[in-house]
Image 1 (cartoon, rainbow, N blue to C red):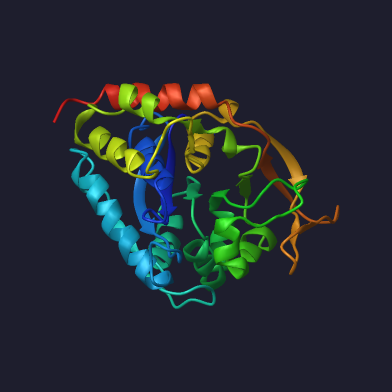
Image 2: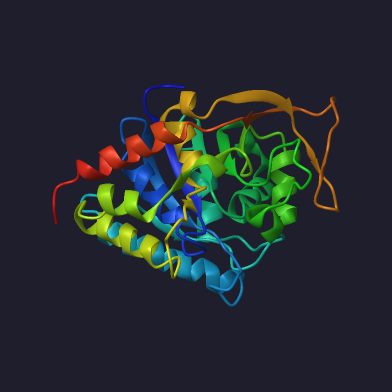
Length: 285
């Protein structure tokens, strides 16, 4: 991997609060990540009425983040799919296809939501599999009794595409891996609040997530995918055969399958130290 890599970020930003931290972390890491575009991914939970509504809310949330980060407001933001796979072409999937062919350098695709936009692009133009590397935050480790978590469960068909297409894939699981990325309100108040408009915004949404923070921590899962691109030593991986996602939501294994990389662990302290340091270096609003 070169010192600085081309990247796009595909995110269901309004689904929770970890995506917001991940978006900001990617934007604050130009020493490793040249973020060329951000794509709004669909989601459906209590914060949306359906995948299309979730995508639009995520698009609006991305804009709120960029508006609070002087110098980043011109990063292109594209709307993604309004439905699960099979999905109609979207501005996000079309931009991904076009951007994959813009340079001989590989394009790293940080996918931290349901991978609908990325899978739609791969289905429409399979040739991009030779020009992109997907870093996907989704599912659980291959040894875990349940493969599915939120991102897989939202769009299993799109998850199958990533695992079956042969696209170079770095799988960043949740349980026992990015689950290490826990922080507390006290830590956020000490190291994030006061770091400009974006720091205050992140601190506010963290504070509002739980009605009571006493004795509680919060996982910021999505930081894991960005952290692998910032410093792969913080998110060590191993080559494994791409697992099969079963209809029961479990993993099945076949040693004849193609190889991918799977993250094994995350150095929680190194990641948060880096994020907090970069936030504190921002000029005051």
